[in-house]
Length: 227
Image (tube, rainbow, N blue to C red; front, side, top):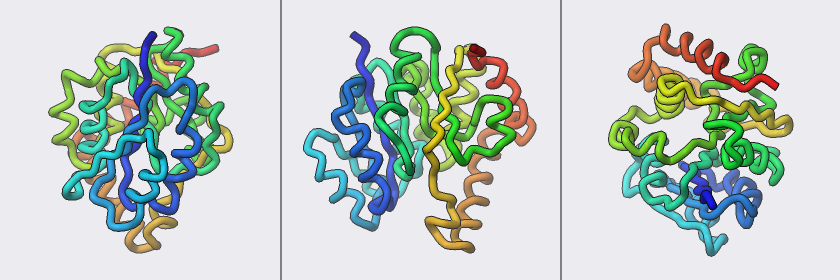
C-alpha cells in the first residue's frame, strides 16, 4: 500500500499552523506528518510539539521554503508527498482526501489545488501554478533534490512545474472552495508585505524567465484532466 508523507514548511506561523495540523493529524490517508520549521522566532515549534506523532525538523538558520520542503522530502518515508502551506484558512479533512485520492488511486500523476482566493484567470484555465497544496510521487523529485535545496527561497513551485511539464504528468485540479491563505501584507504589514512580495518574484525570476512563467500557465493547463 502506497504511503503518503505530508510535508509542511513553516516560518513564524504560530498564529496559523495549529488549524492546519488539526486537519491533517490523524487523517486516514496520511501516514506521516513532517513540519520543517525554518528557524522561526515565534511559538511555531511549541505549537507543533502539541501533536506527539508529528515529526518536527528545525533549520538552524533561515533557509527558505525550497530548502525546507526538500529537507522534509529527504527525511520522509512515503511513496507520495502531500505538500501543504502552514497558513491556510478553512482547510477541511475532505479537502485532504480530495487532493490525495486521485494520485493514490492512479487517476492522476499529480494533484494541485485551486483556492478560494486564487486569481480568477487561474481558475479559468483550471490551474494555479503558484499554489502550495500539491500531491506528487516522491520519485518525481528525488533526482532533483540537491537542485531544490539550492533554489532561491520562493522558487519551489515553478521548479516543480518544470518537472511536471517535462514529464507530461497528468494533473488533477482540486477546487478547495473554502480554503484561502493570508496575503503577505496581512501577515507582515503593508510595507514589509510588499517587500516580501517583490522578493518572491525576484526568486521566481532567478529560476524561470517571465516568458517561461507565462508558458507554464499554458503547459500546465493542457495537462489538466478534463472531466
